[in-house]
Length: 499
Image (cartoon, rainbow, N blue to C red; front, side, top):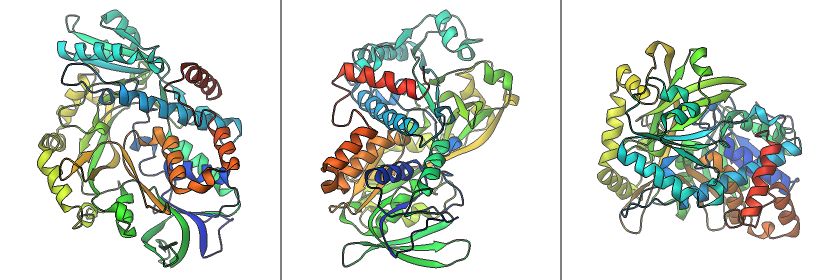
């Protein structure tokens, strides 16, 4: 599919690789900041947001650290750190500011098409885990982002918050939960498609689906030569770009490596696949209205933290449990089994070997997940929903993630859970690697990228004014300013229909 506004020049200002939430966010921001920019977007599949941004391929949680226990690690002295949770909560508030701007300025229609209010709950069992959760709540409620968080060990109260989780549970079991009423569910696929719909209507913007970016090389003038193949016709094309963003999910690493920039050296990828159990019984779906997150198994990557999850997918209520992790050598759900092997280079071999050596717990965990039987998966579900029946659930394949492997100052290599923006020294090319909380923090990630890659322009009064229009808190700290944070959250909640 090619936009009628197709850029005819062989040189464009911006090329975006991948039609996911990151490219959509960056494209809209850049077009807002400088309307005369020419932009070409290439997507290897025949539809928008079909990989990591698709509703069934990600958690759909507006990651604000309300319920995700992996963002609040327990230190050796027994205390719980809320630092990362505070950082992520601020990033999601900034993201909501931009989304509110989109709604107010009619870039998108009704916010209910992509965001819904769904309570976020953490749930644990066992004395040690209950002690941890209590300490977590005590640490988090000291900060204004989480002052509304409730905590309970009372079975009757927990039944009100999450009836499915508590039905049939032994009253003598030691359990605890924390509750945040202002949690959200986000359909990133729906939002991504809406943003690209807006972009396609702008002058000098072209979106080409079913087009594979085969190579990225630097020209003598420091612009980038992009080689693209139309997968339907086989026709090949070259174009030059002043700036390139590689937002191709798991496919970003191979393209970043092809660019040859010094900053790409030493990076590798560790692919992790996933599956969901999806409830097919409407009566069961109707009884649950929350995202209930638990503690991850030893060695599990963050994307595999178990959760019993209410979702709104294309206007229909759904209930999912998982994700169950697995291993595949593909870097994309619709990628090649050779992806992992093709990414191994002389400059990242030692980090890859070091991660394999140092992450035996992860290896054992993934082997165990791959070997799970249907009975094993049902048993895991019943820890969160004791009365679950196998006949009410169907197994579906979730998304594919590539965790970042990078050189580390203290060791040969480290497996990094999270997102990493890799940018050339001159700011002419940038790529996003990694996974969660990715999509939920897309706006501050793209703002940081713009500040790195468009250093001169971002300092101009025009760009500064536009950034503050898109994100009213821009340049201020929601972490430090409680009044600003409260006012921001109240405004965006109203605009996004979350009150």
